[in-house]
Image (cartoon, rainbow, N blue to C red):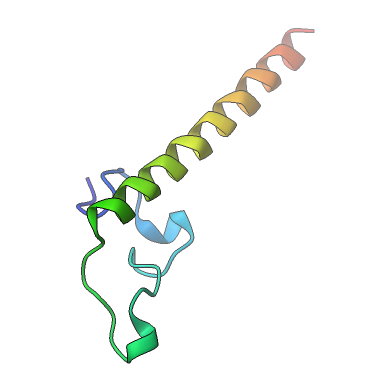
Length: 66
């Protein structure tokens, strides 16, 4: 399980670079860890992605049963 967001996916699958999303580059460095608020937002976003994926799977099942 990933320490940053709590999911079981590698962060590149979330679409950000190395799990940090490039935070901190404005000042010439990159933070190593996300804040609790940032982790919370990433998890909320991930949960929404899962809901959408589940809806698509359920629609495909209905289509196949028709």
